[in-house]
Image (cartoon, rainbow, N blue to C red; front, side, top):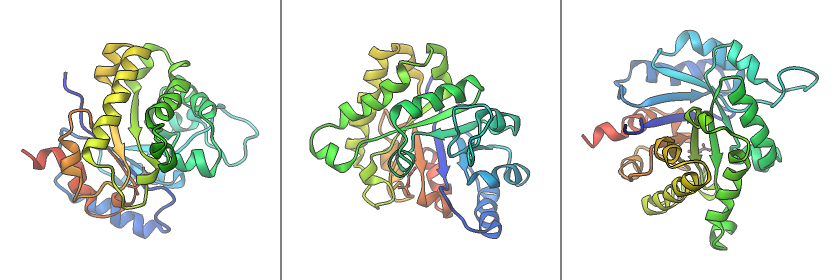
Length: 253
Ligand code: PGA
């Protein structure tokens, strides 16, 4: 079975008004979207519930983060149980901004991943190297270490609810997209790692999506790579060109 193309929009801490959010969503609601693409948008958490009423049903919602406890004295956090109770199917975990700005270690990300999957959420699990790590030839090692933290704690069956987002930190929000050869090489390495660390079937079936300065202009070439199964889009997901990214595979015919 071919892996279903997956495109996620990570709105991050944008936009700053309900009116702007309505404009972004109305573009998506009226667009001709490829019905074979799985589409997910991740707005700031306080917009998740209102968006359920306004976004078309083919578009699923994702939180941008959650904590690893079910409830309790954790000011500012949202639990997997609360997301499930609100019928939010996805959560992004391990985004590089969470890792660098909010000091989330791979162990914390792994705990969150286990908690989210146990609560029946699906997880967009982010990995990626910094520029210094790439230049030092450490890309594969860094990405494998980030994956290993989760691999050690997940059951084989959990992987059907995980999408891996390879997001080189140097490409996020910089306008410096990875070349399709760089993305393909990293994705192939991730798949090879999953094959030996989990199982060949999990490696074959798990979607590995690329994130980092994806735009309408570069998405088509990236999407022709055999191991690029979609995108996690930041800045461009707030713009009408997000529609072209969702349709990247269809446009090729
Ligand atoms: P970008 O962000 O598309 O703005 O580079 C991607 C991401 O952080 O998921």
